[in-house]
Length: 90
Image (tube, rainbow, N blue to C red):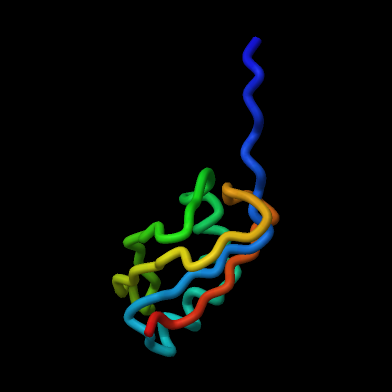
């Protein structure tokens, strides 16, 4: 058997988002969006990664959003306990 180490789960990942609108900030802050990110981005993550995503605008419409990894704390992988912090991209 191999001597592979499991990736360390990050405690916090800080993500910037663009475009920086209040509607996008509200959508990103929802519990359901955080769960969505944990499922779809499960695995390794690094500062500088860019993710092309979308958020729900209501009535079946979506808004494109770019998320950029600004910092990763205490690990290198996304897991169930990882906390996401969102901030507008300047």
